[in-house]
Length: 270
Image (cartoon, rainbow, N blue to C red):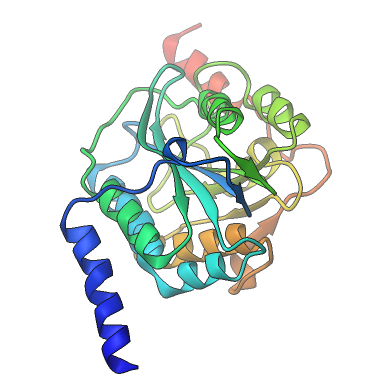
């Protein structure tokens, strides 16, 4: 038994070290998965280099974790489809890892290795709406079938580029897509940021069945919070610590969903 476990671990390590990439869904027959998950990550200039590194490593470590592997295995099919892109302004989206079937710890480790080796980029402006629109296109183009379609938007500021975020959100929700939010508030708001970014995400960004916001308020929280978020999304169930979870509410926004655009117009003198 111990020898079998050792052989399996060696095989997994060899897959990652050898540079074998994750299995693209396009290279496989149509497959049903528990969730098609789009990971959309903010790389706007308001994110400093340390935050960008912590954010990337948070996803890498989460995908390597036993908790995420267990959540995948416990699903109805035991399979998920994941893709990862980074975004900034309305026309700035970098698709880093294509749709990938994750049906084992080895596949999750290969995805993490592929993501970890990607270069770091940055971009001007913040278009949450552009990220949502790009994510919708990816979900519509996803090979195979998914029991649930979920988009996960991380960011440290409000929409200030592209069309209104609520328009993009509402169109996505009407297509049966759920949008979750990961607002990042680890430093005081800058000149184009807003206070209470979690409320903005809750009222203006997320939507669809089971949508939630889970915030990062300290640099030490990246790995654990992203891991918790992925387990919640994959499992389609609440996870601890519950105090971090801000469920979507059916109510009027508590702040202007055009706050970012208004600040940009004021800055430009228009």
